[in-house]
Length: 134
Image 1 (cartoon, rainbow, N blue to C red):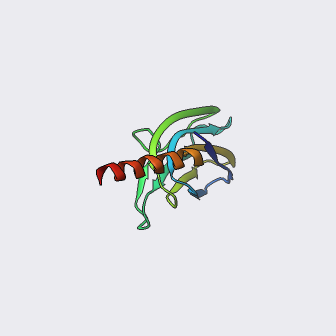
Image 2: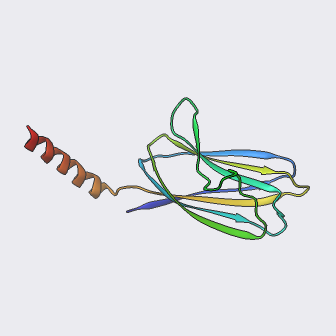
Image 3: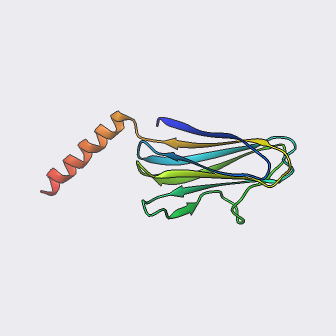
């Protein structure tokens, strides 16, 4: 399946918080994530990933840890996801720098989606099912 890597990279100044968002352009599945914390973060930069699934603003936690936030130092963290998303859903990334220095944090979320050929084949199968069922 084709995929897209959605990249969130920000220099987060000391004592600030960012909420970044990306609206999906296609239906698909989130299959993985990656976070990079540079040296010197010393666990003072908190990061979490959320998914907004409806227009009411309700969000779902996506970072696969109990305390919701990840805060590491000089580390890369890769994790798997298996979450269906629809066009117009949003992925949200929150970055909170509680430290005294700025830090550049990177987060990547991977979305897989059906190729146009696969979508045509699915429509053909659905049409055939309807025809058989009458």
